[in-house]
Structures are given as C-alpha cells and as structure tokens.
Image 1 (cartoon, rainbow, N blue to C red):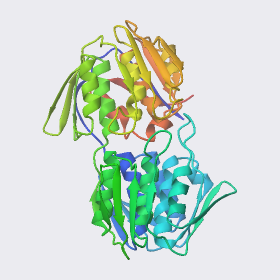
Image 2: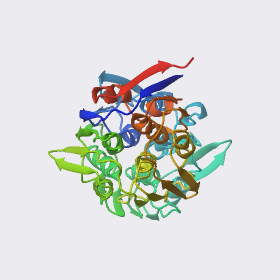
Image 3: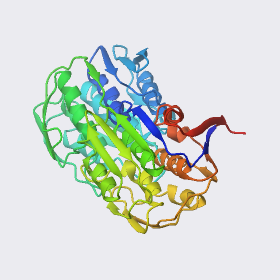
Amino acid sequence: MDKYVIEGGRPLRGTVAAQGSKNACLPMMAAALLADGVTTLRNVPRLSDIETMAAVLRALGATIEWEGPHVLAVDTRGVDKYVAPYDLVRRMRASIAVLGPLMGRFRRAEVSLPGGCAFGPRPVDLHIKALRELGATVELEGGYVVARAAALKGKRVNLSGPAGPSRGATANLMMAAALAEGVTVIEDAAREPETVELVNMLGAMGARVEGGGSAEITVTGVDRLEPCEYEVMADQIEAGTYVLAGAITGGDVTVEGADAEYLSLFIGTLREAGVTVDVSNGAIAVRGNLPVAPLEIRTGPYPAFPTDLQPQMTALLSLASGRSVVVEGIYPDRFNHAPELVRLGAHVEVTPPTAVINGVHRLYGAYVMTSDLRAGAALVLAGLAAGGETNVRRIYHIDRGYEGMEDKLTSLGAAIRRLEEE
C-alpha cells in the first residue's frame, strides 16, 4: 500500500483543471449495456472505481478499451452473462448500477449486494422496490439480488427514502424503464447534476426521458436503444476539494472546468465563512482568509450542501475562529475522519448525526489513516495546513475518486510525496 507524506504549512497557488465526474461516469458506463454496440465516453477519469466498473462489465461479457488518456470505449456486443459477481461488486457500491440496464435489455440480472465506503448502511431496498413496481420478480438469494421479468411495464413509482431521493435507485429505474412498455413516472427522483447527465446520455441513445433535474422524471419506453458518444461532465466534488485546498492553506487557487451553478450553495457557504470566491468563464477562484468564520451546516440531497464535501469542509472548520456545527443529513455515521483530525490537533466531538468543531489556531503533523474516499481527502487537506510532517496512510481509498491528487497538489506548490508503505 502507498501513503502520502506531506510537509504542511505552505499556501497553495496556481491553477488546476477539474477531472471528469466519477459519480456521473459510473452509471453511464453501466448504461452502455442498454445498446448492442460500442459506446464511447470522453473525459473519463483514470480511477480505481472506473477500473472496478470496467471489470464488472467485462465479467458480463463486454469489451472495455482505453482509446486515449481519458477516452473509454464500451463494446457490449459480447455480453452473454447476467451475473455481477461478489468479488467485484463488494469493492464498490456503484456496481449496483448494472441492475437496471441488465433488466431493461435482457430481463434478467443477478447482482451481488454491494460494498463500498464504510460509513453506515446504504440499503438497496429502493432499487428492488423500483423493479418490482415495473413487474419484475426480485429476490435476495445467497447475498445476490436476483431479478427476472417476462416484461417490464411502466408505472408511477415513488422513490422516497429515509435520507431523501436516491441517485442510484433513480438511475437504475430510468435505465430499466427506458426499454419497458409504456410510461414510467418517477416521483421524488434524484435531482443531482449527475442524474441530469445520465438523462442526457440516455437521450443521446434514443431514450425518451423528460424532467431531468426535477423531482419528477418521465420515461416513455422505446423498443431499442443505440450506442452513442458522450463527453462526461466535470467532477464537482473534486473541484470543491481543490477549492477547499486553497482555502485551508490561505492560498490562491483557481479550478478550471467546474460548474459554479452546481456548486452554488457550497460557494455561498464558503463566502459566509469569509473565504473570497470568484466565479468567471467556467472557473472558480478562491483566496483563503484564515481563520475562517464558524458555520452551521446541514448536508442533504441536491441542491442542499453535498455530503461528499462534508469531511473536507469539516477539516476547514477545524481552523475556524469559534464553534461550528455540522449535521449529516444523508449518512449519519459519516464522521470517520473526525478522530483522525483530532490526531492532527483538531477539536471535534461527534454525536451522530452531528459534529461540533471548536476551531483551533493551528494543526500539527501526525500519522493518520484514511477509512473512505472523502475522509481521505479531508485528511490530505488538513495535512496541507498542518505544521510539520503528516503521513496519510491507506490512500488507495483516495485513488477511488481523485486522479493524480499528488500531481495536482504539487503543481500548486504543495510538498507532497507518494511513497510505498514500509
């Protein structure tokens, strides 16, 4: 395993470009299963999660080829299997995205119950409910979701869940419904930009999907979909992470390619904290002003504050000039980064779903360990701000969602090295 060794205390300065969106790309790769032929995706990030999804598709019989540094071709002409195996799906929750397209095109699927980040349960109940509403028989057998249908018929389906709309269940239902009979209306649909991207891609394949970005999506089934070429949107979470890297180090960083509209609440929250943020021509520029002002934040489904930026924001608030409160409205246990931040000198107390952060004057380098993707990003940010040397271990979690993080940070003036663990 590798680790990061960071010499902190250096303000970051310069410009980086946002990578393609991981959370958009994964279901789009799965959507290629809906058509017979080669679908080409551009602006695909080179991440371990992308490779995991590619492995899942290969297990189904697809051929996956990199045709350029960030161009991925998915050839589904050889798909002749319908089982997504445990050994692959356990690595990443987003693997469940193959369930909908397999049912849509082949009317059969066996997908292992998924794994992924360890910050609380994220059940697949809504995915199963959605397919049953369309007429499928769905059972849990030996740790697998086993689904069959002679036909799928459109219906009005409500996807309300305890944590709000489910992006994964919305995606699976849209993909299954695209080749179902009749009209499917999805109530309480996810509204994230990544969902809109999938709607647009399905449209490019010939699907009839309306209402992307709203709480109600209408899918009118068609007989056949065709392969397409599609350019993946920029990764808003990665962009927000580098914006926060500039803020937490008191630096001056510009992130190109990010869509400020999708990050409007995040940007507004940073401005509340006293961080200078300028938006122009597809770029977000941040100038850090430490210490930041304390805040009260509650995460929630889009367009609320994104849960995937909560750990990184908690790292910034550890250097605030007072007491901040963060309420996690999606995953109540998503505070695995808190005890590691404490090792760096932060003062964080967690009583799920709430974290109370009493700001300190400075952080100090230490050995810390990542437990999940965004927690890892938060620890890197804290290490960039901390005095002395910070060792961030188990960075394979970070590789799931950030392409070449050490290279981008080095280009901004960070002293960060990737080393093999002893």
